[in-house]
Image (cartoon, rainbow, N blue to C red; front, side):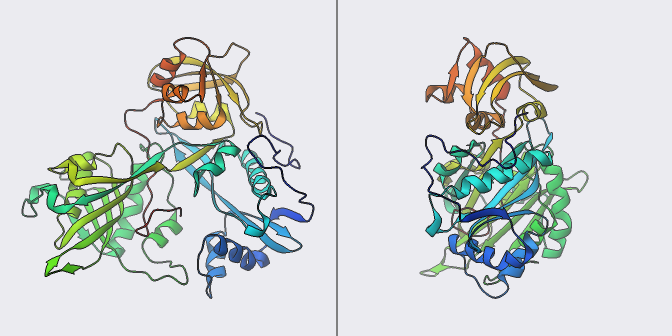
Length: 440
């Protein structure tokens, strides 16, 4: 494993602007007393209202996380946070991950290498903590590829025209097993069901107790108003076990005495196709609703196929979603299973050094191993492109077509596709808390 010395910053390289002197700017961990100004810097960058209680709310949010700041003569001009996470990989294994968020640099201090320094400090720390990968939700596409991240999952948003969908609310067999529940019941049932769900969902991340408190209104950020959503679960007909979760909001709207209410699905988690079918059909047949907004789905979601007319589900957004940074290649590649038994020698380029080297991967449906090797390479690629392949959401042949992967030995691209690709695309579920697209 290669790691930079702990006192060495990430170096400038082609594609990054040259940084002026940063001698007055200190990048370090944030103290408790500095949380208010750290919060103010973050809120300004994210266009969030800074009201009374925001700093205390943030203090609780980041209590167990790694919080980094850039300080110029004592003033916070950059923010960065990472937290311990678990990423589900193909085959059902869990990989420790550093989940990056709350990243910002004040407009007065751009182009000074502050993001490089904060990110470099945390990535070195991730290796020391035993986290072989880092993940994040990129607000802008061009930023993180320069630091070795690559888009590992994608997401799609749909708008469903209820009247075109062709579902009959009186056809109760469509929604068998679905029952509405109170917020308290949902809080009791949902976490356990989600834990079972993420066991087999490549790309899924853990949802901790604080996540569920915020998602169900027990913890509300100052300056925002909580409107209680509607909750439903789906139970299996044989055991009564919860195998599906649904959370949504709706706005009563009328036009010329005709109901035109939009329904926004915040969260739809299903452990089986039957559960997804029942919960989606329930949402689409809610009275007075004419449009259902379904965000943050996998691009190959079955949702349109559960409608009598799949064209009723109009794709409105298709985008990258979770970005992955591989730090420890052997541990990361050995953590997942592969579609077919095979061997690949991967020559990985990494300007920051963490993943650089030539690696011998032997993998199959039962497991994998990965070690450094001197054998001739089959494929050459950057670490960010290896991240694209890792969860099975991208194909090596596609990346080769746009010049991101070089095939050294004939047949290696085809073999990589067969090994890395998964039957269904990986998915990183996210609960939508507002109707517009954007980062958390």
